[in-house]
Image (cartoon, rainbow, N blue to C red; front, side, top):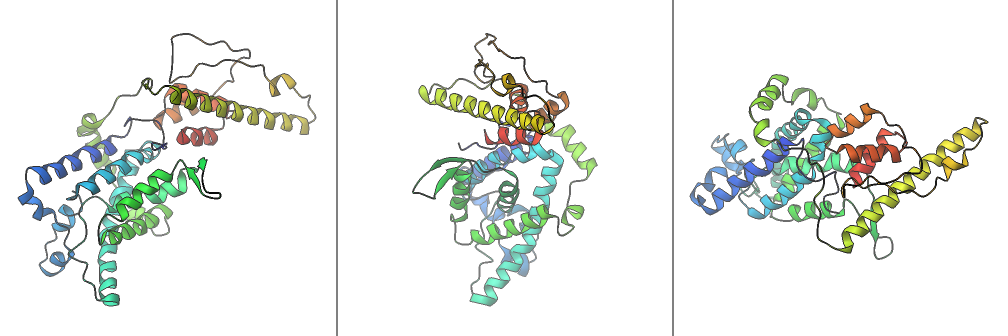
Length: 343
C-alpha cells in the first residue's frame, strides 16, 4: 500500500535514482566521517543576508544534515518517481529546478514576515537539504494521483492508497522547529509552477542542450533495467489475497466496460450480445506470477492499440500490465493509467 504510485523499482527514473543515492550518501558521509565539514552546509539566511554568503543558497539547500530528514525525503522521492515516468526526466528536472529556485525567494519572504509579525528570528535555524522541492511534489501528487479507498475506520475516516505518503510528509513537516517555513515555501512554489498561473515554467526550466548533455553523461550511470516480472514474496496467504483482489477488480472493470458498450448498442437500436455482457468464466494468467503455463480463455482477447501499450510502457509499466489494463478498460488510456497508478 505504501508504494502506491506505480510499479516498483526505478526503471525510467534516473533523476529520482540520482536524488536518492547522491544526497543520501553525502549526508551519511558528513554525519559519520566528516562532521567538522557540516558547517559549510548550514542553511543560514542571516549569513546570506548580512555576510553575502550566497554559496549557502546552494550548499545549504542540497544536503540534509539531519539523518531523519534524509530518510523521510528519500522515501518521498521514491514514491514521487512516477512523475518522472509520466512527464519525462527533463520536465521533472524543470519542476524541481523551478520549485527549488522559487522556494528560496519565498523563504526570505516568510522569514521576514515572521520577524515583523512575531519578532522571532528564524533565519539561522532553517533545516538544510533538498526539502522544498520534495514538499512541492505534493501539489501534483494531490492533483494527479487518484484516491482509492483501501479500508474504512471509525465511521467516516478511511485509509486510502495515499494515506501513508501524507503521514510521511507530516512526519517530515514536524521534524524541526522551523521546517514548516521550508514546507510552506515548497508548497507555494509547487502551486505556482504546477498551476501555470504565473509564467514560472517559461523562465525556470532545463534547456534542451543541458538535458541532452546529462542524458549522455549521467543517465547511463543512474539508469535501471526494465523489471521483467515481480519477484515472488514469501508472505503466504497475503500475496494470494492481494492477487485475488487485483483479479476481481480487473473482472469488475471489464464487466462495467462491457455493460457500457451494450447500453450504447441498445441506444443505437442494435441487438444485445448477451454472451459479451455475461462471458463465461475464464482463467487468465497473472503477469507478476508467471508459472510458465498459458492459461485458457473461453473468449478471444480484446484487441488493444500498440500505440497505447507503448505509451504505458514509457511510463514505466510492464507490457503485460499494460495489456491487461487496456483490455479491462476497453482501450481507455486514462482509465488504464489510473488503474495502474493505483496498483
